[in-house]
Length: 428
Ligand SMILES: Cc1cc2nc3c(=O)[nH]c(=O)nc-3n(C[C@H](O)[C@H](O)[C@H](O)COP(=O)(O)OP(=O)(O)OC[C@H]3O[C@@H](n4cnc5c(N)ncnc54)[C@H](O)[C@@H]3O)c2cc1C
Image: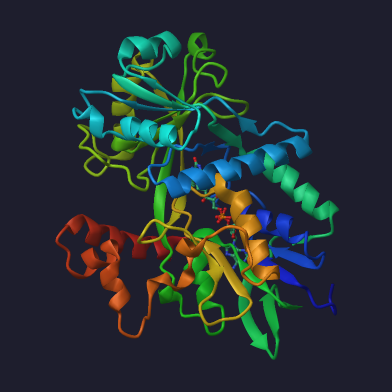
């Protein structure tokens, strides 16, 4: 490897880096992946046990992309001969006591969208109908995204890592990239006092994107606002006599996105029932009586359980997991060549929802890199240039979150902005 020019160096061994390598193999065998810790380390976003896979986005663009990506997961699972898609469905619920305007809720709206796009979905119009199918939930309406469920991370990372190594990708763990610079037509990537020469670089470093961009010669990191936001997942202990009822055999992934809640049933080695906070694109349609903006996340999760999972009123918290989302101000991903910097590409800003899209993003990245933007997917919406020219700062005014930073009509945004800057400082 020492003296050989590589075709592609991928920086970051999370799910996006791994899938970029997987699809890049169609074009070249000279690929190196550098990961500053280990694949699946506890700090990266692609760690832990499970990630939802679902189609029920309110924005049809994401909904269509999710089902495209799901086909790729199914294909990959068949190749792996391992089980990593747990197709238990995803149930969006709503309850009058919590969100009085049911017709404005995510559950109601997502059904309309799934239906209009021809996805497999079922609507439960009252609590009685819902109880006939899912005894666990106390809710007034629900929408089941039938072709949904969750992805089991340990099996996926293991399969991808083994496959890449067996096909000749050099995966170097504990290799933190400290500099990316240009020498003539070549790009030099420095790590652990070593240098690799390459024709292309893919940055897939999640919440470390801004840190990484500071190390790329000529990249003006402020142009790519990838903002880290701390997240919390809680695992709750289900009493032994209820374990079967709350396992993925009998219970779907569940979400009450108007209240910022989603969760996963018991499965495999997962420590308990997972309940987490997520503030997704296009959600928060309607006011909820419990609100994570006003109370701490654990209290919010307990409120959800008390209201919507009545069996589990006395459930105990087992453990909490802390991690980070890489947000963009407009909630869209960034998948593109760096503006004005040839042959250095980035996949980032996945806003807490990227895992399910990873095969599609990896394929698009590989095609952008090796076919020079000639990918079958139209990902113009994810262009890195959309944040505009930094010179006149006009782009700041076009992005609601920034607008609120400058003219904080809503102090919540200013607070969030300051929190994001502090989070950046404490990233592991
Ligand atoms: C708590 C939580 C819950 C989520 N739930 C869902 C869900 O239910 N469904 C869903 O679809 N998505 C979900 N997501 C989002 C999804 O997990 C992420 O979008 C996805 O994992 C991002 O992958 P990534 O490869 O971009 O980043 P990461 O997995 O963070 O990988 C980046 C890697 O880059 C490495 N790195 C950083 N700097 C350097 C450097 N200088 N040199 C070398 N390596 C470096 C890091 O060590 C890290 O391993 C969730 C995310 C979180 C945090």
